[in-house]
Length: 148
Image 1 (spheres, rainbow, N blue to C red):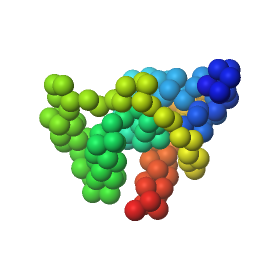
Image 2: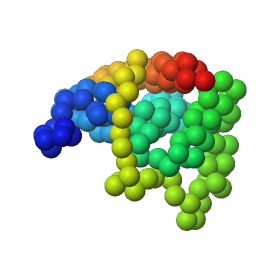
Image 3: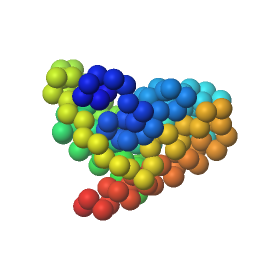
Image 4: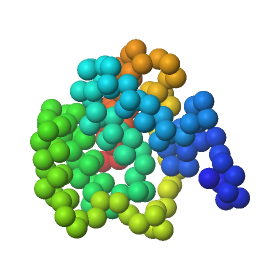
């Protein structure tokens, strides 16, 4: 939303444009829906969700975001299995551990990424989505490398 509470055509955090009137979260939902029919895409579920979440960092507690970033890099660079990441995160954030920041504390900051969900979710084009997710993750990984 803009300061005057009118909808905008781009995400205030990742800069993704709306696609067919859908915001970036709705685009993510469609992409995840395609996993039902595409085993290659389904195998990338962690990469898809982590890529989205890394580009929407304001919703997460800082320590959670740091661990997600570390897990994402370990998965891409060293092949850490998603099942091991789920186990570790499940142990770390079970019970009363807070993962999300309260909505009142979220302060999205626009960051222009080379690729966003809008480059991956192409309406009515599920073919090739897994390759687009891989390219998206690689672009995020390259940006994270620049930050180190």
